[in-house]
View 1 (cartoon, rainbow, N blue to C red):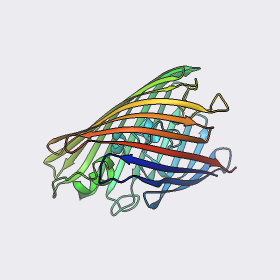
View 2 (cartoon, rainbow, N blue to C red):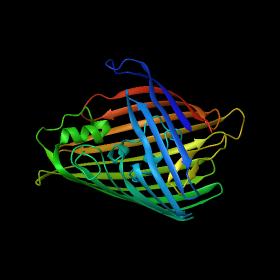
View 3 (cartoon, rainbow, N blue to C red):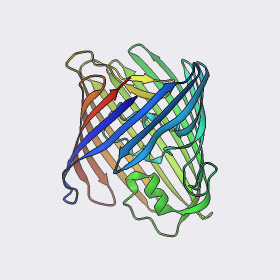
View 4 (cartoon, rainbow, N blue to C red):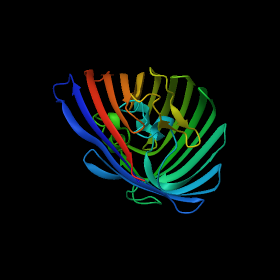
Length: 334
């Protein structure tokens, strides 16, 4: 059993957004090995004032390189998106992760050895008219990574593809507001609908000692009413440096970051910087650019303080600079 608690504090220069402190996330989960080859995982998450499923699935691992799973799972489209919140470098993920499909009901398969990893899934969100529930969407996701991680250095290249089919049309303003979170306050022309969308992404990572550089680009096309289309694409580049000499720990078998172990009893200190940009065309081009500086203090393997300075500059409205502080604590009971 494990828990994760995140307490956030924000202060920005936007008069309409008063300084605040809130519980960003409170998570509890259980993972159990039922037999030598079967494991069960279940978890709930409290965030943004509601309780949602975090993960809930059954996995079968018939041999070390192969895993099959079914239940409430995450579509394998982005390295950063699949990384746990307790191991992510910044308070908020890059804007391109709002293009991914998130967690929903479905099944998937993963195969990995020491140099290549392949994962695919078929999912459908709960809603009104899908094979798995009643949301109107059936989704296919495929991701492949080629990597070489040895000692204090390493690299990987990844590519992903996703396809979404909707049995019934849905207003674009609803779909973009729900699935592309950074754009939820943007006005989209009413009366437009999309029947399907396609996701494509590429990513790269290189690490040498305590310094790592990573980047990702993704695009998502929406076909609407059979005649009109919308497109969003986004990218980020990030550099991180452990001032105290540690290195990022990465589980390439599962394609995600798993945190670090401080070398000193006083903890580990990490400095990081990221540029993230997104473009939305419906049909006019709108651009949003975010610059983030981060400082993380890992008090131990399960506790850290995060400080972010973010300058958000959309071309369709005023820019904003904010300071975010997060205290994060993860507890494993047994």
